[in-house]
Amino acid sequence: MRIAIVSDIHGNLPALRAVIDDLARRGADRIVNLGDSLSGPLQPRETAAFLMAQDWVHLSGNHERQLVDYSPGRRGPSDRYAHGEIDGPVFAWMKGLRHAQALDGEVLLCHGTPRSDLEPFLHSIDGGQMRAAREDEIEERLGDVAASVVACGHTHVPRVVRTRRGQLLVNPGSVGLQAYEGDNRDYKVENGSPDARYAIVERRRGAWSAALVAVPYDHAGAVDMARQRGRPDWAAALATGYL
Image (cartoon, rainbow, N blue to C red):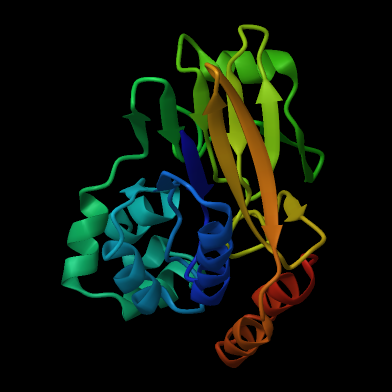
């Protein structure tokens, strides 16, 4: 069993297509998407059309919830742009998604943590930076979840953790945005590369393993789109993986 995990696409369809091409070479039995699929100044409408046509398991991220529930005054610039580009069928699709979902008994998917779409799982915010979470922090967020594999997104930072109980925890990183600043500018994330990120988890002889994958793509078009739409922060992040 090989499961490909994508997350935090943020409307970056060229990056997603590069991941799909790479997956065609590596192979996977299933593809799952952990959410935050559309928000951003790139191609939310086109990305939604692509994703809605796929036979994948899709989750809702915090940005799907915000696009559906937030009033105009509460939306940030990325949500405002996406909200103006998508239509009724896309909103209906997003409303039907959950932020956490079990998969085949052994695997639990979540956007943030099993209990929240906003809470970072394998990372913590400390002193204006996102750092690797400590064991006690991870265990508290994991709670009584007994799944052999837990896949999470939200932070955009790839990481794999094996708990003392033997559970495999995987954050694939972000397909579409490799650096960003927190909504309140209280922290920043910089992955240091523009490459699209995803992960593959695989079960062999009853044991689960994980591989984190970085895929280069022609990001110049995405950078140009961000600049044209007044988002120099996104343009820098897409071009370099730094702010």
